[in-house]
Image 1 (cartoon, chains in turn green, orange):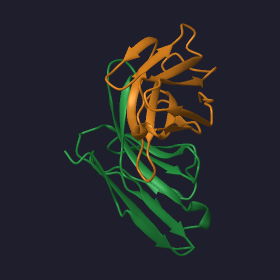
Image 2 (cartoon, chains in turn brown, yellow):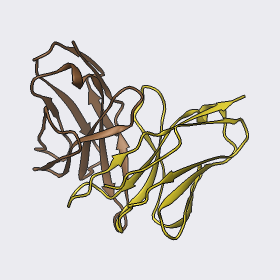
Image 3 (tube, chains in turn brown, orange):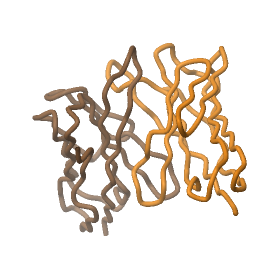
Image 4 (cartoon, one colour):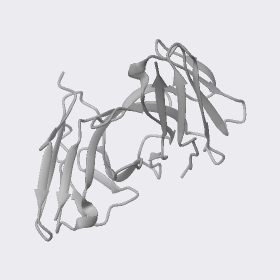
Length: 115
Length: 112
């Protein structure tokens, strides 16, 4: 299994441009999430999905859109890039264990710079 | 949301045991406590998860008191390669109002 893959690894955008960060998982996990991590900080949840066709907002959703048309893919769209969106973006997928337990797997990240 | 508080940093030496405590006073009934390890330029990696009492796996132990308002990650006999940031995460899977929130993490430096 490849696990969670993210493309691209690095991206530079100009203010106002739009782009899509790709995330795919081959573990048949129901749950997928997008986080951003600013320098020296913890991860903050942007959007998440509990299954194909179902998405919801996390802690910092403004400026981002998501969709989940298949179990495998969960792209993150930046609508109009701003310098404040300069960050490292991590995608994660999870499965539910017994009760409410879970295990979350993270991708390698996409480093985005907005100038 | 269950807010977590961890020490910002800890130093240790090779072969020592490292204990990192996380406070989570408003943990909810369905919340699990999960610890992740993160190296520079990599995504977080799952270490251990627990709900109550003690959990042990091949790399760590997790101690959770009866009131569940705190938890302690124990790394036995650390090596230089254990130098990383360790995050405590309290919550249940996203959905039905649950949102997993990371704290600031504890930067552990293992010295020779």
